[in-house]
Image 1 (spheres, protein in one colour):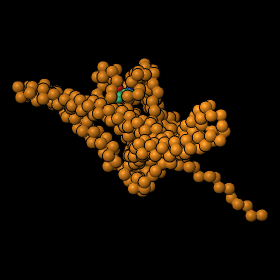
Image 2 (tube, rainbow, N blue to C red):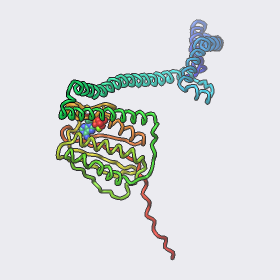
Image 3 (cartoon, rainbow, N blue to C red):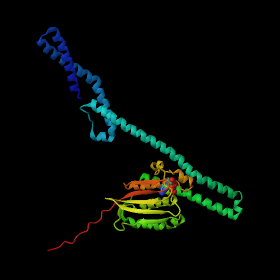
Image 4 (cartoon, rainbow, N blue to C red):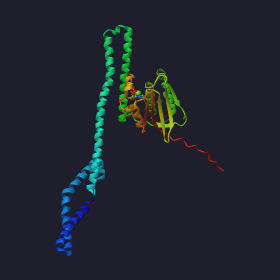
Length: 352
Ligand SMILES: Nc1ncnc2c1ncn2[C@@H]1O[C@H](COP(=O)(O)OP(=O)(O)OP(=O)(O)O)[C@@H](O)[C@H]1O
Ligand SMILES: [Mg+2]
């Protein structure tokens, strides 16, 4: 309610009360009207002055402060000072909005802080494991194992595996931080998705054999799977997802890649019939270093960065990734890509 309206009603109430009392004692309409007019104007002047001086001007300052804080300096400079014509109502709304914004900002900061703490403890754990192993083998070699050729060879192989693990870890971390900081930009290009999927599957054939898993491309759409994306990054997404389907698949199982055409997107799904994922783990699956208990228990090598990289890449394309899984039955990871519109079939123009 505006200040003038507020004061008007208050003064009218005072005026009517005074005039009413006056009429009760005097029973004269002239005095009633006179009392009404005088008390109305006097109280209007007094109320207006008092409310403006002690309440409204203060609320206006609060309002301006919150309003400009909300806008930020740049926007405020651009829009100039804004004074609401109804600060009492607006200030309530602004304070509510502001409090909500601040609360979500604080929640977000808390989450980031928690994430940072977890991240540091995870990273040190991931580095410690191979480093301790390397230390152990080097000590053992120094303590005499080097003189036993068979044992030395075995230890050196293990050493090399742990060194590889460390270098993969550093490579993945480097990649993820570059993706996050936007240092590796997405280079969009148009390419045939099916051709890329076939290339990736071929490159992973040996690995599939090692895990005794057969790969299958549901090639319903051999033509026109033209997408607009970063070919090399999508290759990595496919490699990471197919690699997971082997690691968490079952011996003699199958990994299927299916391509669906949606309205203006293409959906790629990678399905396995492996160990599956517990429902409670699904929301955290794409976090860095997150690994489910069953994969830890199976002692399958991995640092839990593969899916975080996949998510980063897909989201940097402004696309989405999702997962469906049933424990013990298998999992399906699906991501979308921007489809390049198919050319319209042009009919020859007939000259009659
Ligand atoms: N297809 C799958 N089936 C079952 N569990 C899966 C599957 N894919 C991922 N997971 C679970 O999600 C976790 C995270 O996967 P992610 O690819 O990020 O890490 P990783 O495979 O453990 O290590 P790496 O960094 O080498 O990829 C895995 O440890 C596993 O527990
Ligand atoms: Mg992985």
